[in-house]
Length: 164
Image 1 (cartoon, rainbow, N blue to C red):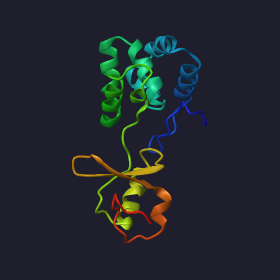
Image 2 (cartoon, rainbow, N blue to C red):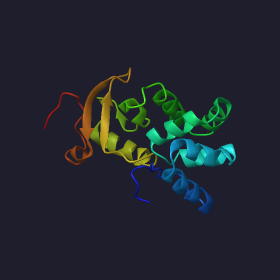
Image 3 (cartoon, rainbow, N blue to C red):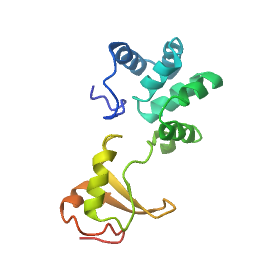
Image 4 (tube, rainbow, N blue to C red):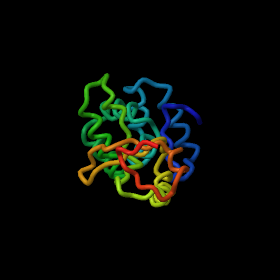
């Protein structure tokens, strides 16, 4: 499936046919109808389906579930994913805040490029990475790293102010 509404999770096992059917059906329905469809399933299947959808769709479907069910489903996904969904729900409906994925590809400004490449090998299992984000110890953004820049020199430090 190359649908932009579907999140890529390379670390996840290939879903079974039932989960694939639920994903397909959920994508074809309005969020209230998708929530009704999914509410017939056990919490772990709802969590699996939602973890494979884009965040804005997840937030809309979760909003349609009863609070206890929403909490149960969110407790079954990776902690960083559940936390991100909770944060996304706090933003207004038409805001970009509802579109956010958990941050992947965070780097210390003093990391060497070789170290960044080494860390990327494990990070790509969590999801696709187009940009790296150079952050300070408080995770404040210091700069953006384009992946093609990592090919240049594996011994250069990732300095936020560096332009080559």
